[in-house]
Amino acid sequence: MTRLSVEMLAADTADPITSAGHAQLGIAVLVGIAVIVLLITKFKLHAFLSLTIGSLALGAAAAAPLDKTIASFTAGLGSTVAGVGVLIALGAILGKLLADSGGADQIVDTILAKASDRTMPWAMALIAGIIGLPLFFEVGMVLLIPVVLLVAKRGNYSLMRIGIPALAGLSVMHGLVPPHPGPLAAIDAVKANLGVTLALGVLVALPTVVIAGPLFSRVASRWVDVTPPDRLIPARPSEELERRPGFGVTVATVLLPVVLMLGKALVDIVVDDPANGVQRVADVVGSPLIALLAAVVVGMFTLGRAAGFAKERLSSTVETSLAPIAGILLIVGAGGGFKQTLIDIGVGQMIMDFSKDWNVSALLLAWLIAVGIRLATGSATVATISAAGLMAPLAADMSTTHTALLVLAIGAGSLFFSHVNDAGFWLVKEYFGMSVGQTVRTWSVMETIISVVSIGFVLLLSLVI
Image 1 (cartoon, rainbow, N blue to C red):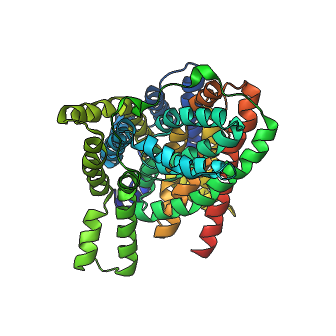
Image 2 (image 1 turned 120 degrees about the horizontal axis):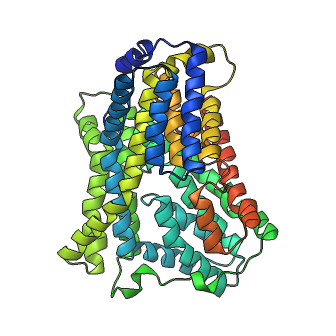
Image 3 (image 1 turned 90 degrees about the vertical axis):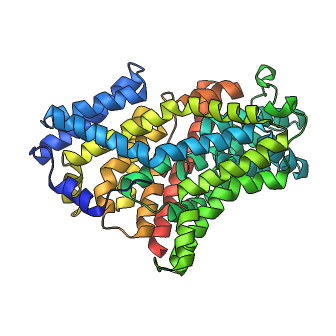
């Protein structure tokens, strides 16, 4: 992953491209964010174009030379895509292999076969957590919703009792755990250690899923009682396959990159000697690029070939997995450009000057900034990238663990109260056949619980680590 050194970051904040005062810079930030919010919400412009135009508006409002603003934006876009682009692509390929081979369905069917009526909500949370590791939120939802609807209908369960745990598992993984685009971009922006962030992210994610999923679903099922709509129960992807990969090998493939990256983090802590042979091997094998690449290569055999895919089918699966992520890559890249523009006009230094006299925790400040942008734009990814850009200078003096917790605080804020400006809100509403009010009382409240509970655990961890 491409990383700017702390010295370069310090140079960026100490030598801004404009001599504007703090008041003008503050107004410029508000103008830039307002332009992005207005373009996304009012004019329905794509987030990539909105972030690009918002970055130019930010530079103009700060009285920065246009050529310097353009240079900052393109440099930030380039470094961000270089840092996370390949990882997002590899994650997309692994997710597509998991879906097309029937591996995802195999995980679902195996766990559900062993679940009782009492443990079914917990089983749905477990399924969503495992499947949500390599899959983007929307892909995971499309895979899981048919299962949720079928289980609720055939088992005569409350749709909320089954659906909320599944949504919670997917959402928590999307916001807190790499290799999802938001956490990856935040890790790149604040120069966090991916292995440590992953370990702490999983540590925070587990209790958060329990509280926002199976436990909250009891309340949600009393608030909203809807019948699964028959018209929205489509055929499952693996029904056309003659065979599917086994449960054990599928789970092992999904967890392989996680194990490799966590292994690297553990070796770094235990050995702590860059010249040591074991640590050097772990640093290579556990790097995000190699870990995800290894999982993709292994998955071609354990998932693709196990499902009977010929070479042509495997090639087609890889090809079709890359097209849908073009928009995500562009949004993440433009967010990186916006972040770099913020840093280069001197906003980072301004925040450092102001925050040194505040009694607000940097983690809480990061969460509040992400919450504000999330409420305004409806995009968790935009909120994550923008907040990470604003907080990047404060991360320069943080320890490895606190930088990782900063990423998690930003991710937690990016999930706060999904409402009508979020595409996920409408996806849940239509799939579950709910009204807007019912969706707010279930999905929106669940997202808020995830955000508040996870920042609570992040702050607790900051006291003991």
